[in-house]
Image (tube, rainbow, N blue to C red; front, side, top):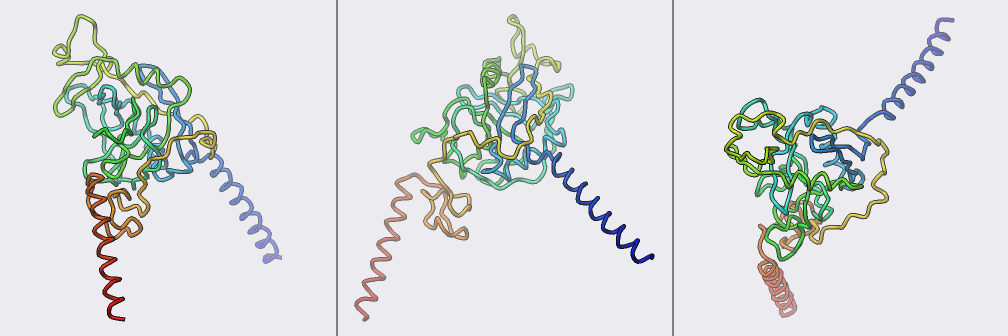
Length: 288
């Protein structure tokens, strides 16, 4: 009798565990792809590319779930370029206080940095250094003739979502604010009166900043990006080594690469390799 009861209880226990696990899977916010940015300048929504830039989206959502961005501030605006945030808060005095970031995430430069996309910020010369900071592209920052082409430099910047609806009106509103300097930070957007200047902001208050009051998940569907058609980057990195194929003499070998160079340099590298291959073939032919 004891053996029979134990078996029945075990079966029920496994069934209960299955139900609980399924419930956790259902409410798990890691699948969410539409988030709302609630800011002191207005709210807007962003659809994340969870199926195509999964590591970046997962990294971003981990900060969201930890409320890392709650009451942080927008710390940089570069006119006609980007609006950047995610890395600082105002703790009552200048300069702004850096937020502690988690480990970096691998670069996923699948999409182009066109107007309205959100992308990860990172350290110069390190493609896989993105952590907690992100930016919104105010313009199409993918022009091949522009030195600020974000699809090309530093292994390409990972665009992992795009603003939807009329949300860019809020982002552009932020970009039109007065810009001040504090310590090493330049272009900090400030809400100041018409009769004031940045010099009057020696003792600012929270009301003088663009505050990211909260980022909330409003749709936890896994494929909310299915109807989006973001522009793919013109510069793929096939082997994921942080060097674009156009600059990489070994685009299929992650253990071999060359540093970023101009197009002419890359072409010269390929030309040199072709010449070496022809010489090697000729030698083998002569030896035969």
